[in-house]
Amino acid sequence: MRGKSSRLDLENYNCFCVLNRILLWVLQLLSKTSNLILPVIPPAMDPRILLDRLSHVRYGHPDLQKAKEFFTDFGLTPVRETETKIYFRGFGIDQFCYVAEKTSDGKRKFRGGAWIVQSMAELGKAAKLPGSTPVADYDAPGGGKVVIVKDLVGEEITLIYGQQDRVPEPREVPKPVMWNTWEDKRRLGEFQRPDRDQPSKVHKLGHYGFEVNVDRLHEVFDWYAKTFNLKKTDCLYHPQNNKTIMIFIHLDKGKEFVDHHNIFIAGSPEVTEGIKAHHSSFEVDDVDSQVVGHHYLIRKGHINVFGVGRHVLGSQIFDYWFDPSGFVVEHYVDGDLVNEDSKHANEPAVAAVVSSWGPDIPRAFFTKKYEDLPGLKDVPEMPIEA
Image 1 (cartoon, rainbow, N blue to C red):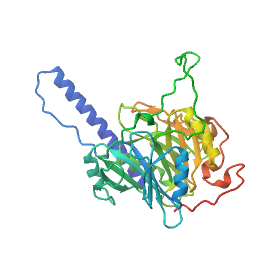
Image 2 (cartoon, helix red, strand yellow):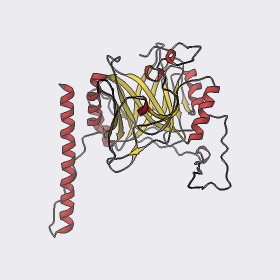
Image 3 (cartoon, one colour):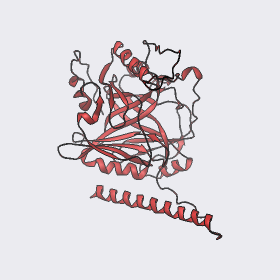
């Protein structure tokens, strides 16, 4: 009953937004086509917390040194290190895109995602939510102000405003690859010679996702869509019972094009309470960089989960890896962009929808367990997820 009520609230809110836009359009039209002096009516304040972009994710690791070695090989750069935390960045404007935090109980834990909000007023809205922290100084690279809120299942969401963007040095920014296609030959007298002995060049955090109990999936999504400017992009459903098992979600910025998804929520019958980590994904600069990084990680002894291949929903070329704590992280490139006019897809969760090309999907991609990888001889011990 609660989930149904949440969906009705969301539908009523969406109707309100549409009617408000129509009213403003009519008033603007009248003011241009008549001599009437109309009162200036300010647009209704959006009750949602308006997010600007995705910032970073936080993960708890039993062994910070192993995490540092892996994520350096993965293509991230450490920018601040203490006894309990390591901040990593890509080559983009974000001060950091991944935080590895030391756990004291020997377990691993996904500690949530973080977003940059559009104004200080958005932090004020966030601080009024039940269970949220007050606005405070942000003790992290780039500074700013911060509020931490919790969703319906207890996951922390970090909201930041006023953090100083970093200015990438010219030497950090990869040269864009120019492709010679059958129709368009633009690369004249220049050669493609990528260095094979280097990590992928990570630009930014692209998306993250988590699992909740499948019976609460729509309820949790409705909370996110009602609380933030987040909107459903595509869905996957179970082909046997037609129950939705994954929702891809993008930032709602109207006509502006944004990433196909910055967050996704999966439904699992195995999650009885709280959440379980699914994966986080990081954009790299080009396909050469991605494949070079794939082989670099293999030579370094890291464990590939699934890839390289191309997804159907989102279209990105993907490559999934286990980190030393058993979490799954992804490199991706060439993802789709969407806006308010993009059509929503609802597809069955079958192999042909997971990838258009690539290797066979291993069971480990779904279970997140080492032992479900084919051909893995020395199976390491995976820390328990808290």
